[in-house]
Image 1 (cartoon, rainbow, N blue to C red):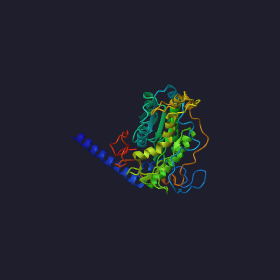
Image 2 (image 1 turned 60 degrees about the horizontal axis):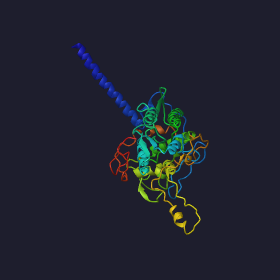
Image 3 (image 1 turned 90 degrees about the vertical axis):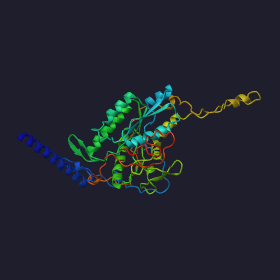
Image 4 (image 1 turned 180 degrees about the vertical axis):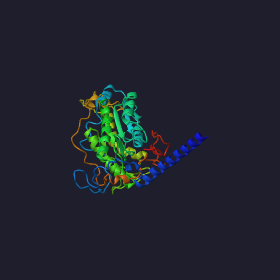
Length: 405
């Protein structure tokens, strides 16, 4: 009996200590904006970042009035996208062109929009390799590099599109030491993981494109996301990967978050954002993905029919008119000379079109940001998905609805 009593006492003591530990974590969460590890020993606050100006000291531009600009790639950083060794080989062999989409729940949305864009091309296959709730800071949950290797081993691809980061506005542990968001140790680790992923794809002859994150409704979260966009653009530029800046087409004319926006391609108002203030609607994902989707579509466009010049006479006129053949509705892709076999070379310039009027904040401010656990826990009500959309949600919901980022 004595032994059993001691066991019961130990069991109750364990429960008590667990309760105290949970309470401590919750208390620290309230005091540190949902990031309790900031109070751990060894937390590296790092050097402060500029709040309102880029690193080169130039003043941050004011938000410009007028219609929303069309989405575009960062100048000087797109390499030869989407031309690559595998794309050239696919065009030459007239075999199906395979596009793989990687990322978190924003990757899910990018996949849905990309799949819809290529629906009329039966020889283009779009593969969903994205996983909700993942990120470069979450390698204990899912190693994105190893996952990508496994994916392309099972299904080789010619083009890779990436959109990720909504879950990464948080610190991580580097060699047993905590590194706060955007500190030098954090940036070095994340850049290494980004580089390993991109180089793995490029070494296989895959053309890689990157889609940035949009304007966010929550001011603190948006500040962190814009810091990430600038960081991503800098790294992808060094890697020769085009970075599609999603911010200009995901904000209103005053540079603020808005649920409804103007489509720069049509000039029409549309529901662009989900109710959670983070994700896009299906139409919104279509808009922000255009800079990387349209160059691929341009490779696949059938060549325009060219009239044959002939001497016109009474007996040759009918033949000349017959030579004005119409381009087939779904013509085969052009030959390989439409795309060079070069793997994107390392560019020298850095992007200049990224928004800098929003503050990037210093790491001493960032710890007060709310927890960036999977970014979309609440159900959302986006614009109805077009007929035949590959979105995983039911009709009228966003591909990322009700999911984590």
